[in-house]
Length: 223
Ligand SMILES: *Cc1c(COP(=O)(O)O)cnc(C)c1O
Image (cartoon, rainbow, N blue to C red; front, side, top):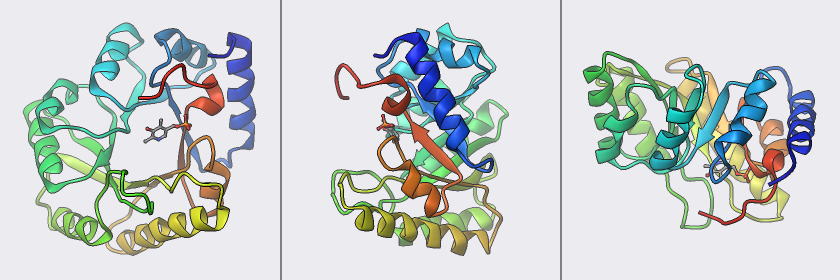
């Protein structure tokens, strides 16, 4: 991890670079709660975690006005642990999980923001819906089958490669799907781009970027 000053410098630099319509989700997975405090002190409120257990630990320790985004794979049996406080679940990758989020949101009397995660990368290790699966879920949502969730957009991860043309072609697939869905019902969030590729993602239409190591430095270990 970087020193506190260095983290703030990285953060300020990124904030200065981002166009005003692009939001930053600061990804704090594997970094201590203290690193969240550094950005919180600078006024930042939107943070992302990829694992429920780590999210629960940080949520317990940190100020309650933080808007937490879950950005990693979510199992149905864990939804009820986060339903009362989660701001946005970016990683909806099945009908089963959307149904469970809808059910648990109803139980706690909330509407939970979600994004549909679409698989755009060529690698087959990444989670996500196919475009057709995403279409079907979105159409069911437009027909109001899910009353306690707000599908606010799409999320995707490009292939981990140096090939910028490939990365852009994958982001463009997601952007085209976003425009297609937006024509049926207005969407606000196109979440694509991480530390290594957020510039390309913004070129391709991202409205939200998820940045971890570009702010906090290299991780000690990869999860
Ligand atoms: C870890 C992670 C990020 C941030 O990755 P960095 O390369 O550290 O910026 C973004 N999105 C998802 C889904 C992640 O798991």
